[in-house]
Amino acid sequence: MNPLVEKLIDPDIRALKAYHVADASGMIKLDAMENPYLWPQRMVDDWLAQLRHCEVNRYPDPSARALSARLRDYMQVPSDAEVMLGNGSDELIQIVAMAVAGSADAQPRVLMAPEPGFVMYQMIAKFVGMRFHGVALSNDDFSLDLDAMLSAIAQTRPALIFLAYPNNPTGNLFDRDAIEAILAAAPGLVVIDEAYHAFAEASFMDQVGRHPNLLVMRTVSKLGLAGLRLGLLAGPRDWIDEFDKLRLPYNINVLTQATASFALERAALLDQQSAQIRADRSELISALADRDGLQVFPSAANFVLFRTPPGRATAIFDALKQGGVLIKNLSPTGGMLADCLRVTVGTPEENHAFLAALDAALKP
Ligand SMILES: *Cc1c(COP(=O)(O)O)cnc(C)c1O
Image (tube, helix red, strand yellow):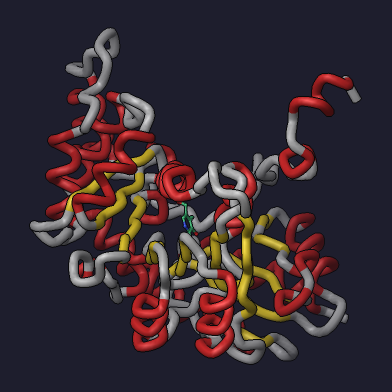
């Protein structure tokens, strides 16, 4: 290795692996929790007509006021809460972590999240020099182990806790009372990550402002707009004002601002697609439960986690891929996720193709 790279880049960063995205060309893509539906042609035409008016020679509105107002309304952000938009919620996770990283402290501060959980929490902790502390979920049903969380909080005094509600990759909603107990016990910030809100119909958004340390994060990615990269963080003004200083100017580009506003004016379509996905999720869950040897976990998200017979997950994943269906193999992660695969709910046709390929793969 170039000795200067070795000298200047922290060992923690060198040890990281860049976020890997599997090549899905030509495949039925059920690996990334995307909404599978395109817009009707008329709507695409209207959208393109609006984009004609975008002045791409100008910088975007730095605080995306029009879009923020629409998002606040759509996401029912309490009127006394403040919001900040991010280039995907990934950027918001990074900004919050940067803000509380405490790089001047003698000891690295702790970023805590249940495990298994969303991988970006752990990666971003490393980016900003925080120590990641994962707390195992209950082994049987992936529920929060409240005793374990509370004692880890008492021991490590985390500056920042992330709770994905529902959780990725397990799909379940954590118990509300357990979350309330964590909010009360946490000495630092608690971010409830509601990336899958459209499929869960449960939220802490109305609690923003009632706890001085609660932030709620949303994204439009799982709602059908993953390509735009747009997330929202809601919280008390004194927190958001500080985070906003770390946000790079113009982080939400003109095309995203125009397109997201356009889509939110037609939110009924997005809501209808989410309702369809929720209905298809139920069908997919029962179809999976009907297959011999599979253990299927409940889901309040747009994906389903299931466990294959011992030692077979990777072979089944590979056979699905051979059959043109890409899902997510979580088995290599090990631990509680050994033998587990995760499939995104697609269109009914995609789900049937997945089930057919799965039946072929399950044959002994
Ligand atoms: C997908 C996902 C996100 C990422 O959202 P972006 O807005 O696309 O960056 C955040 N949190 C969780 C738990 C997710 O699964």
